[in-house]
Image (spheres, rainbow, N blue to C red):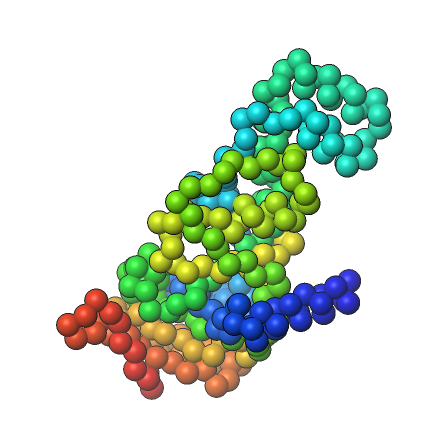
Length: 262
């Protein structure tokens, strides 16, 4: 297991070195108790796929007509006895609709067993600030992947598409390849998010090294009292060397400007 994790870590580092993965990723957050916990516990929450706000997210359409041979091959891989396999195949022959229903049910359970963390390649999207940082009153955390590459196993760059081909759960090559394809495919309407997802084997909190957070950006509508509180919260929880910046509305442009906050 340790050797496998080292191999995955090398994959992350190599991806950064070759420019296939950015060194810095960003987390947009409102100022609430959950954000306080991120700072206090030095951990981030990896969510279930079915908790996301987009009903199409991680929920691609399953093929209407799944081959009986694919279904048989799948249940055979699970190690059932020949009698069980034969009984299931006979039932599927009589009621073909049960194959697709079973595929959707099993697929959903499989995908929801993984924990997902949504990060962005940008920190200055006015839409992202509006949607995920509570109307520019929140913050954005700048995360340095080189400070804790183990935390970013496994990264998936989201592929934004206008259309897609329905998927076949029972006809896939491997569980992991199938899951990654589902998780990393979203509608092109979400392209502005420039999202990279980190996928872990369990849902819940996962700890990171405090040196991971390099910068904190305050929204242009963030109250000064909140800026001071957040800055102090990082200090009392042992973070060091973080650069704090505050945003403002750029002159004559639909952009944000950032300056050092002291």
